[in-house]
Structures are given as structure tokens and as C-alpha cells.
Image (cartoon, rainbow, N blue to C red; front, side, top):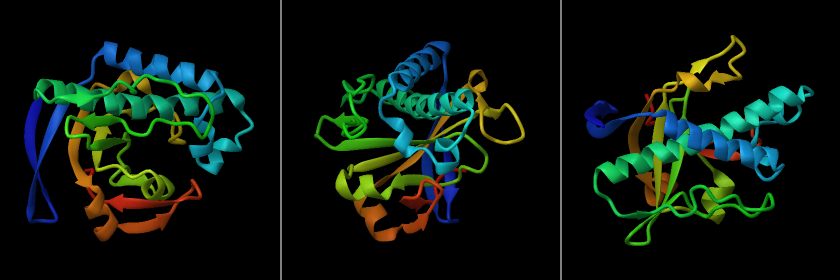
Length: 203
């Protein structure tokens, strides 16, 4: 773990952390993603229309696994940071697969004070914002939203699939609490057809 500081908006110093991604971390995330997607369970509804409508089932499956893998790896990296910092937290849901598209985990982590945490993970150069699904934000809000960035490399020029083995580092880039997002952030439509909250945090 390495600690460093980044200046935001030319005025704020944000403490960030670099976490080494191990093969064990990647294997845990991949096994979870593969089991979840092959169970034909939850995540298709959260994919962009361009992915959901793909006729190539093999590419679609790989993208679904990739999306789930990235998110889970971000959670694992953040859990690693919390452990190194000696923080007490509840992550018993991390590898639980819930049956049914509408039956999902209610949070990624829970602090000893019972505050909920949701981890949002970016993995490309263009991923410069913390994105939070508006429906989830309104109906199942968390106390804190954490921004994580992975150093993945693209496999091809279409910027669809990435080389999962290329990921060696996760940067924990800060967090925003619910009140800040509610009062300060912009709302925008995306390809997922759902409005998302944006927080300009990832660089």
C-alpha cells in the first residue's frame, strides 16, 4: 500500500492509496463473476443497450463477466486497504450470489457504526467520474460512495474487452457521502438508459 495526495479543483488535497492487485485477488473476483453470469442471474439489466443487444453471445458473456469482475475486484482492493489500515468492517455479503434480478446485495461494506459503503470502479482512461445509478441512489442509498480506478489495458481498438491479466494496481481515489452527492452533483443520461449521478473524482 502506498499513500499519496492529489489536488482537486485546484484547492482540495485528497488522500489516495495505491493497492497492489495479486493473482489471488483476481482469481477470487473472476470466479465470482463467472459463477454469477453463468447462473443467468442478475446483471444483464445493468448493461448498456449496445451490450444487451449483441448477437455474438460469446462476446456478450465475456463483457458481462468483465463488468462483474471489475466491480468485484474494486471491492476486494478496497477491503485490502481497510484491512491494512486496521479498520473494522462487515463484508460478509461480498461473495454472496443472490437469486433473481431484483434480489441484490444492499451494500458492499458496512462499518462498525452501521454506515453503508458502495464501491464504484473505473478501469479506462476515459473513466474520470464516479458514477452512481440514480434509481439505486434514490431507492437504496448508501452512506458513502468510494471511487476506485484499475489500470486495465484494452484488448482491441473497439474498447470493449480488456485484458484482465493486465490489471496490477488499484488506486483508491477518495469518496463522497450521500449528502454531498445529493446536493452537489450533476445528473446525466447515459447508454444504460438510466440517469446517473456524477462526481468528478477519478483521474
